[in-house]
Amino acid sequence: MTEMISTPRKRKRIRFSEEFKREAVALLRSSHSSVSEVSAELGIGPSMLSRWARELEECDGSQRRPTYEELEGELRRLRKEVGFLKKASSYFAFRSPTSTGL
Image (cartoon, rainbow, N blue to C red; front, side, top):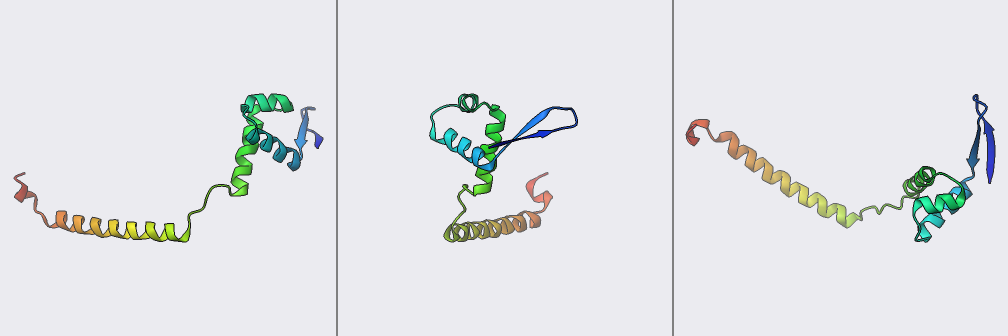
């Protein structure tokens, strides 16, 4: 579960196993308790538990990836927007400043 590592300052650093980290994050997600409460229960700092949760979320790819159809729809929308912006920029490019009364 844990491994003690000595650092040059003679402080002992605790290294937690990946299994312990995963179980701690699972406990956090399954309970209705705050990060502070769960971390105190486990005897670790709240910032450490938050970091583990964030790292596991990034690593697991739990953020939903868009589907192919969603990407195609976004591409169509962006192409329409580019066409509109091209027309608008050409309209304003050919308007002379004197025609507006400035």
